[in-house]
Amino acid sequence: MAGDQLKVLNALDAAKTQWYHFTAIVIAGMGFFTDAYDLFSISLVTKLLGRIYYFNPSSNSPGTLPPNVSAAVNGVAFCGTLAGQLFFGWLGDKMGRKKVYGMTLMLMVICCLASGLSFGSSAKGVMATLCFFRFWLGFGIGGDYPLSATIMSEYANKRTRGAFIAAVFAMQGFGNLTGGIVAIIVSAAFKSAFDAPAYRDDRAGSTAPQSDYAWRIVLMFGAIPALMTYYWRMKMPETARYTALVAKNAKQAAADMTTVLNVEIVEEQEKAEELARREQFGLFSRQFLKRHGRHLLGTTVCWFVLDIAFYSSNLFQKDIYTAVEWLPKADTMSALEEMYKISRAQTLVALCGTIPGYWFTVFFIDVIGRFAIQLGGFFFMTAFMLGLAVPYHHWTTKGNHVGFVVMYAFTFFFANFGPNSTTFIVPAEIFPARLRSTCHGISAAAGKAGAVIGAFGFLYAAQSTDPNKTDAGYPPGIGVRNSLFFLAGCNVIGFFFTFLVPESKGKSLEELSGENEDDDDAPEASMPMAEHRTAPAPPA
Image (spheres, rainbow, N blue to C red):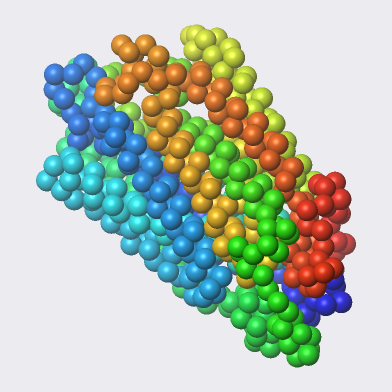
């Protein structure tokens, strides 16, 4: 209830959009830029790694990573991310958002550089050290999810909170795009300096020795943007909501926000002490289950099934493009030429489908709400994946490949103008301040569990049903067509579980979580969806 709200929180909710909002978006967003760059850049260089470290001179096809190695290289960062989301999400509620925020960034920078410096005298040694450092890179990235979302939600005003959190997440699109551009530049430069024939013309000579530097440069570049924002992360004050509602120091929160907002805020000590005395239920309490149990179920399941579909498609674009012959056959290219063409294809999809989807969310989320965007996103992802799967043989026929890529780009557009954005935003809004980072971490970890299934499972599932057409070392799978049917089914599940998640548009964080209410007159947070859809507050 507004009458019970602390003045400092009222001031944040009603604040006009100011310079500090954009500063916070950039500082938090550059972490997500690095997250996306690091997690997706590996898909640009896995073919090159196979050619360098698993070359077989007697094979008619270029070297490829063995199934277990490919699964580990692609998926180990997600395992680290899952662990980091749970650990740093919990730590962010215990120690404070700011104290933990710098730890995650430095871990990302160190492990990003170390990934590019992976060493060993054998292929097994290089892959082992690469996987080791990418696990810890993922651990740092995992911490950035709950902390960035929580910090941005707690800094934002309630009119444009959705757009601000979405803008932080939208930096992932630029991370994807930059990863592709860096890989294009590096592969083109190395190809120009160390040109090599196609594999079928010269098996050993098709991979220039200098190619070993190309993938390392691509992976290490991700440390630069993260390093640039470290100082500014350390300069940010602790969020007022954590200081006032969790640390119980409303006076300090008012002082911090007086500096940030350039408005004099004098907190009423009696009201602060009254709020501090109220009983606060924990994560495993009956009160939490009653108020927020179905919300946590909704956010975890939606994020879980989304990431199975999203990461399966994103990490293995190169395999899908090859299957529909949008990329030439591997033996007709040199190693660096293959890296260049994979990077070019993924950059085009990022530019045309991924980035526009993110920014459509930024512009419309506070207009039409989270619920409509998430529901519509799951619906159209299902429709476009079925549109790819049902006439799959049509799309693989010569002359129809462009249509396949366009349809594929639309699935990414509606993922990002849809559940890929909203599953990140909503958990940062609907839970109490003392559990907000933890619950976001749990939701995000469920998503990364889905990403692990996508990363490990799709490698095997997308293999041809014909044993003679599978990649080296892989058993027959269900094929790309049936895999697309499975991913469409995941989207259907997400569509229905969206109804468990409340609309948060236009409401304060305390109104959504019931932190200003006594237990016996707590707001019905589990009201039907339609009753939660409120219009944004008028401009201050």
